[in-house]
Length: 530
Ligand code: NA7
Image (cartoon, rainbow, N blue to C red; front, top):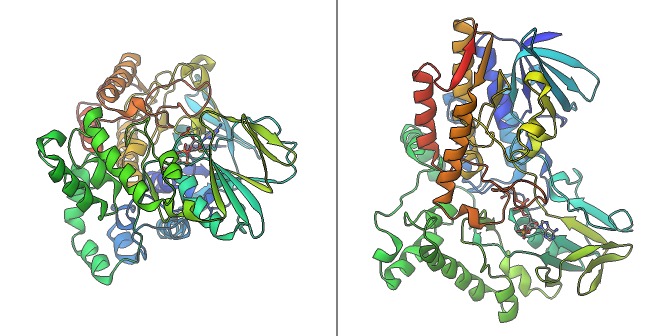
């Protein structure tokens, strides 16, 4: 069977991409591994799962109907509300009919003779298409460390990104949580409320911001809608896809007292970007960064009763923001509970699971449940998990063996007619994802419309353009503190994964201008054949 386009994934990107392709009059087939739309927000149903972007800003802006007809309830939306929103959008756009659910794409092979992609699925179906668009998400391939004894453990193991849909009852259980990134800091307080005892195994402490979540007021909801046109302009002009009022002076242009007042006022805004972007040099100058890092550590000391525990919870290695700042509700307060203990596994690493629990280099911990909050093979994982073969049978795994190389994060040389929405080398996770997705989808739809109008057969990134784009992304990242964080931003969280920044750090606004000028310049850096 042949169709014009195949879309892989039915999260935010996939449903909007499908809608845009349908508007172009193209036939589209979509494949989604889950039973319905939602992407990462379908799978991450662990207690406490919540977005770290404010709800009103974590929404599409391309359709006035969508804006008018949806109302968020909380300032930071919880997973169920986001999933309802994505479902609402998919219903409004009427795109579910294009998708096959419960079907995982396993392979995609380019055919030189027909200039078509043939996609193979785990249901045994093969479908060919002129355009292959991956909307597979950045955080959809979970990562569980390869611990010894995983199979021998007689209790229950869970991963935050594959949580049982009917929930888990921790009552009376001895629970261990491994990992203190965004998922860990959200799930830990919730489990602590139920479990007989919770042991948190922390390798690296997190800089975490009390998200101060609350219901949105009627005024806030009304004002956001009334000022939507201003918001669109401001978010498009911003580097992070979220308007922010960065000061026009650097960190050390202010006295210690002035800085403290700035940080304190912004802490009360409960929005991470307001803190990390308070001064323009906080993410590029380590000494400047140390000032805000110390401010965050002070907040931990204010909350945690035991000074030793507070110190263990205080990040000292990575700069604030070089790993994702986590947003929490009662995270540090949880360590004041009698039924919670903290184990640092930095110097005494986890050796593995035993039938009865977990063993570190220093001790053994009897457990009934082990929760892996150990994150994702981010950004490239979802693509590398599909056997994608371009020209001459070249696999994407080979192509990216030393790290991903893309042009604008959307195209890979030797892989014609493939578009990777929010792929490596685009601003993706360093921005408000929904904003980044709108840009990437709309640019792709315009490119496809152009290709159809000129009767193009193939469209492919030029090798030099891709190499230059990727090198530029690395150069830009080297001007920042991002490389100093051992995080999923750089692939450092996955053993053996090439360590390279996987996002364009130059800002979504600059990226948008670059993409627009590439298009205006007759798709410079791309090779088109008719
Ligand atoms: P993250 O942010 O990658 O966090 C994973 C956590 O798991 C982190 O604290 C890791 O410590 C820890 N980890 C991973 N492997 C191990 C081993 N082997 N031993 C001990 N600890 C380990 O994933 P999240 O799911 O929390 O968040 C991902 C994004 O999803 C988040 O930023 C939001 O955007 C949504 P480490 O820091 O590597 O020392």
